Length: 190
Image (cartoon, rainbow, N blue to C red; front, side, top):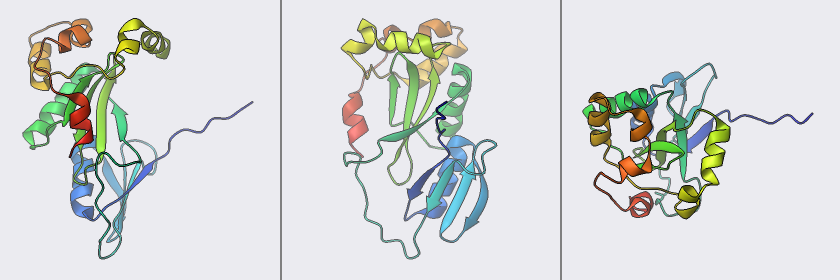
């Protein structure tokens, strides 16, 4: 029997340890399990830490750009569309706006940049099972455009509140009815 590992945590280096700590608390609802002047461990669940932030004494780490080689983003899944919308509205009220909202088809996603420019995706799965998601990914709509269109997250929140069915709101057809932005350009620029 082959045992497969599960993701335990990720570590980010930063010159802005306090700002990064607060951002991950706000965005993920994480809490600090350990910190000292050079590092902070945060978690969102039963794991002892899911996010580790390391700020070398004196800082001085070189800045990165969104278009450099390396990790593109981390992603966190919410149970329901309502939960994702609630988080969007909470963050918006704190002045944290998504950099890129994308209707991938397989997920409804809001991408944010943390204070250091790392991309964090907050998402919901648009299908009930992994098999349905995989089938969609092998279908024409996805293979024709693996990224998908943008959407207006406030319009999504308003439509959800107005009672538009989730089955409609989580489609590319609905997303295309909203104002569009260049998704890849927004992903690859600060």
